[in-house]
Length: 346
Image (cartoon, rainbow, N blue to C red; front, side, top):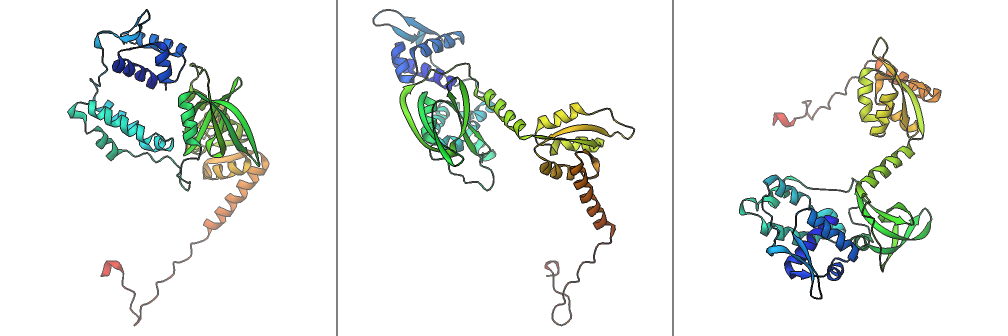
């Protein structure tokens, strides 16, 4: 978001030549203090922004400075249009803004790169929602996206179980995960996460909030996602794994860190190469399904009830395969005693 604001600041100065900090703050819907920080950041990056003092003063760009989309490689240009895939932007009500921005970027590109959007669209398509989910955006997503962009305080009505709660918060960001939108907001001194499809009402206040520029949305989400997964892994099993089973465990464990913890806890291999380790799992029911998929490459040592259940499943499978398979039924004869015609005989 800050990068977009910095570009907007430069474009405003290009268009109007001189603007005061108050005018820039009003246009960008931020505080004057934020404008001062942004101007320092632009100067540090080499953009020639200068301040003229006096009653007619303000910020301006030295020497008719202009931004140009020169020097872009083909990979960079195509990646630029790939970043603007319309699905999530459309959900937030920004489809028209994205389309207009793409047209402006396209007009500024050298002729040799103007096929970038067509090449990207022919090669990549982003279909975010998971299977068997409704594809429409949540009802209040547009209002929340607007509040996030403008740093507006919101009053949120939220469905929690069988009751509705109300929270006043500062909306810091939106996250799209597996087709589900989440709102990250600051309540008091801490941050909380809300599923947008459980929001039942939003009131956007005129009041703005001072954003913590040190807040890292991506980092926060990574921490919360891992904490959520760890909170689900409430049980632990002790298993003995063959070398093949240890390799396959990477694909059957609940989460990457569960596999890494099992790997770290593994003892020294025995004469056959098997190791004993502890594996975090969501529940014994889930562990049964996961470990059953490893077949003969795993032996459950603890808990006894899971070992007994897998032993019983293994015995049933062995009994089933110990008998000869039944003969397949003969195809019915066609009228007149001739076998039916197949597609390959036509």
